[in-house]
Length: 229
Image (cartoon, rainbow, N blue to C red; front, top):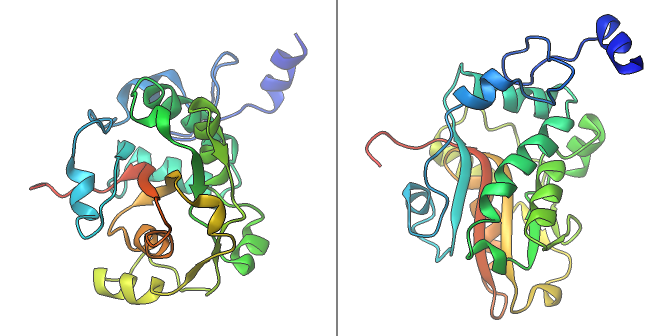
């Protein structure tokens, strides 16, 4: 009863379409849960995401949604990333994690690492938008979650309006590892919010790829896939 009264005066809205949620809905309304553009593949075989990282020998690649500008997926990401709606990350983590837990390949992930943000941006925003998503994925996959090993040491410019080449130049050498030995012979799942050119992920992979026995997979809330991929 109290929750229903509070809802009347402080209605929660859908992180995707921004309409008020019903009391039984959490984070994303039922309509959006059925209409958001889920990607059909999970990862058991090579898919379009592998093409983004073709210069690296990544193991698995997965995303929950196909990303396009000026859509409800973009609104969802913006609410998570810029408007302090951290709960969206948990909701999506449960959604995506439930799918990945059914894939036997993902059951062998040892550690989930979120793509880090620079301490200056962390102070400004107050949180890493990928952490809540990654934490839930780790729980679903019975893996460890660690956001202290991988560090972003160079405060790079925002990449939203940059070209593909500018993104790579912006991110090159921006990451470093705090403890490489703890990842030896581990299967790592790198997680991010959106993958477009893959520049940020690739900067992370550059740090990780020389670790002995490491196996690297990637996951994202959304990915931009080329039409001819």
